[in-house]
Image (cartoon, rainbow, N blue to C red; front, side):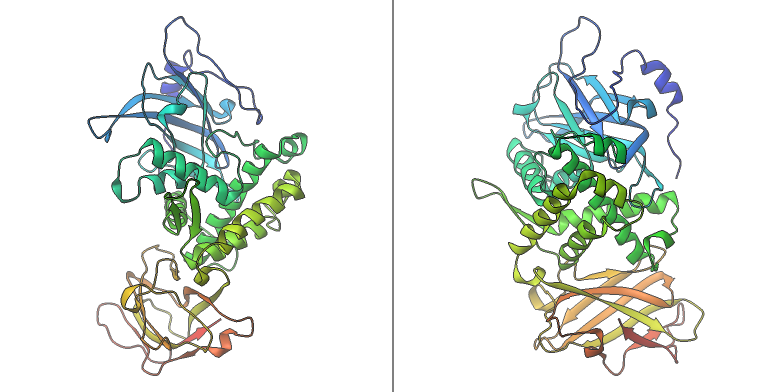
Length: 437
């Protein structure tokens, strides 16, 4: 993956781009010149962006579903992720897409967000006013994903409701309007604005979530052991944010939108990430600088959403499936049956098919597919794991289920007849075992 070279673009655009002061105070910057139009300011933050571009998108047509570019502006390291553009007299739902490179707080590694898979934020038409500031973060991206789920056109109602719902999930005042403090311990410690600090802490939580997702799918022992290319980093970020957005539900029938979590893995990992961010060496300084009040508020907001979700995500436990043995090659597939202990519930849809977010597949190539089904008695989980590029020995999947505190991995057992097969030939490989941890 190549980082886009904006040097020539910056040189041309330098006279029209507004450079803001660093920090988390927001701002209402204006552009020089006497022309009229709506000036929209923006702040991009996942970690701190060093370079990037923002694309302002409007919608036309009878269904307001035909998008077009209003303005594209670059930003550099000295802008600290800030940008500004005059979008003319456009009136309608506004979407801002950001691409570029930022430093992830949880891993301290650079992540390049491609223009083909940008971070997004959307604003309802009634909020599009000159001098406004639009914040673009992973949280706003999740909200846009929900508002446009199924390929539907963005509307004032869907954008407003999903922005409010995702704000509530992370305990943020407003994910589009509240400007996070720079992800710097000194800047956080110096601020007295808990709303802004809470936003930064929520972004750190999401970074932790993405890092822990990467740990699972790369079969790494810890976050610091995760080794990825820049292409993998982009893929993991996109996959993790998609997992969160697809694992939550926004009920817009009530006067105030209600958000619940529907995927067990999302409930488990959001809860863990909100707690683990305070102990991860890379992020604990940021969480501590944000303050215990902010930290507690984030954890409380996440857990409150979990507590209002359906019973299958309220008390989720995780168990890892692992292949052990002396085989040194790759596996093409795994067919396994797992005896489910009494008291354990694995969430399913119609026909016993596993619900989204019940199993995470591991694999360094990011191509592992897992299909699963629970029998009518709820006593056996059957899974098929496939990967054309091969599956390595070690942990190959994580199962999320509800279970009493007394249940441990030792209470699970593998059904006789489970097998691992070799690539190309499909021959069963002897001497391998599936264990549950």
